[in-house]
Length: 496
Ligand SMILES: *[C@@H]1O[C@H](CO)[C@@H](O)[C@H](O)[C@H]1NC(C)=O
Image (tube, rainbow, N blue to C red):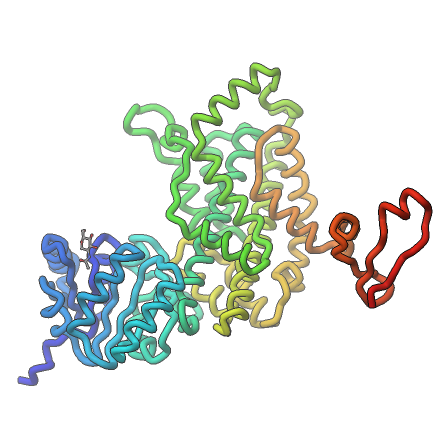
């Protein structure tokens, strides 16, 4: 018998739930796989699952050497361990036994520059490297995630057949594409997560307004989100939200569980990175930033409780400025749906423009339409409207902003009255909607041909002699503002 006949097509190291599920997914698609984890019980667990859910062609290995040597050459190994130093440790343990032409694929939420460092590092041994964003949670990993691999194109070619089968499948292909060079795969996943923060924040604001301005019950909310999920808002997050409102509290036996959950949001850092990168690249991302700020404020539970007490004491009446009973529920629901949709478009516009700016800086040549396409299935932000984003960028790859795509522009205009009503109502009711407000302000700022920035420039020139440009002639100008203001108008000097 050929001695290579029993070698595996691919290996996977790191068998926490995501790793186990991805390994089983790969095996189920017909690719013999070797798995490894330092903790032997994790290997046993995975082998056991492979027997009960399969049986699949999956073999467990208990040492890095056996694991590596069980793979067909050129070898391809996916690692799914905690980002940071565990990745470096795993790479060190594996590369000792790997050879030139072999590939390592890191599927964690890694900072993109760490991937770029590792590409250099393993490249010295002739080993190829991919930093691959994986989205879809545990369920996606098992049944079809969205995959965002970036780094070595040759490495991508080595595993393309596997990735294309393992990824979620949508009408226009598998949810995977070669993203670009360097750490681009990790960067795209990071921005995906930032957009996910925005989506979740906007949905929670829709919930807040419907509940606290409209007075809707959990049962009504569930029905509305199911209904929205049959229209333009159809998406994973809207669907799971509808489910959440239905779940009863089994622990105390009364009411719905959602009302018992402590209002304090956790986070792992990709949202913060997105906002930091937006600032570094001079890209406005106010909706994503607002969602991050909201997570920070949510963490101050005790302070918020104290503030509520202090301000009540000082005379603040909750719900001042609106009468719950006076709200037209049907109209409010329809308005909130439109506000959510328009806000979402602005949030995606910010994420896409951040990706474009980074692509330009790094020379990644990101294809924004393709990114929207691979997010159509598998991942947390999967949504029907990503197909429209894909088409917008296919129509015009140089689209300055999603809101000026002719189709989206029309939709924004159609929805703006409802959007303004919702934000206005929320503001007067004292219900904070930072994401919707940020999106609306983004839209209103971006679409205005003239902003009050002229005054800021005048101030900068007055106190710092920073100079200004004029609308009616070229050149940089400086004016002795204070002198003129106090003495009358004379002495405007052109600098060039
Ligand atoms: C193996 O499992 C442990 C504990 O579940 C985990 O911390 C570790 O990162 C895993 N990965 C590897 C490659 O050993």
